Every structure is written in structure tokens, then in C-alpha cells.
Length: 170
Image (cartoon, rainbow, N blue to C red; front, side):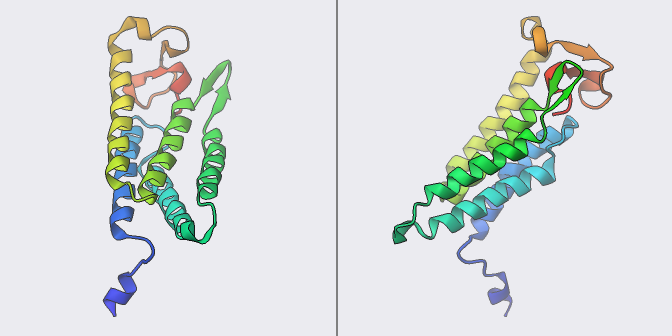
């Protein structure tokens, strides 16, 4: 009875777990900086993309083009990412969060195609990019020019009040 209840065929618990973990890693980094794409959102995006890709792959041998599912995920996630980009005064905010949403969908889609290891590696690379570039921007003055200039007191969350102008609400 319990085995039948826990059966999620054609999905796999391994895929759900990979998508949730990968999304959670990126979401944790975003949430620790007070950005709008936190742990819950990131996990739901990767799991959703996993489910859609997995279900779309079921029809692969029947003459149905499963890449159409991927195209629809890309289109749909673009609208979701666009929703986090806002203009505040002369500043554009949320671009990194939008890019993170796009990457989360890509990771979930990769896992949905059965490429678990590759999806997890992509998540690790994404976290390294987010943390590494943030670290470099804090340490190197040459990376703090133009839209990447630090503004004190713009927002109290994240980096102790020093927030990147174009990433203030990400």
C-alpha cells in the first residue's frame, strides 16, 4: 500500500531529489543575500522544469518532438524572470535574479533529461559564479565601476548595507 502511494512513475525520486538539492543550493545563496529568488522559489523552479522535461521525454519515441517542451519552458521562464526585473529611479534591479531563474530552469531541464550528474555540476558552477563574482566585486575596485558601483544605505539587507546598484533587489 505504501509502495503504491510512493510510486511517482514516470518521474523518479532521484530526479526530484537532485532538482530540489540543486535548486536549494542556488536558492540558499540568493536568500542569504536577501534576494527575491530564495530557497523555496529556486527549488520549485528546478523541480517544475524537471517534471515538464521528464513528462515531455515520455513521448520521444512516438514521433512527438520533445524539444517543444524545452522551448515552452524557456519561454515561460523568461516571463517569470522578467517579472523580477524592475526599474527604480534610473537603476535597473533584479537582472541577476532573472538570470538565476533562467539557470534554475536549465538545471531542472537537464535533470529532467536524465543528466543528473551534469545538472548537479551546473548548480555548483552557478553557485561558484554567484559567490565568486560577488567576492571579486567586493575586493577589486576595477569591478565596482558604472552600474556595479556600491551605494551605501540603498537597502539594509545583504552585504551590510552595501548593495550593488543593478543588483539591489536580486
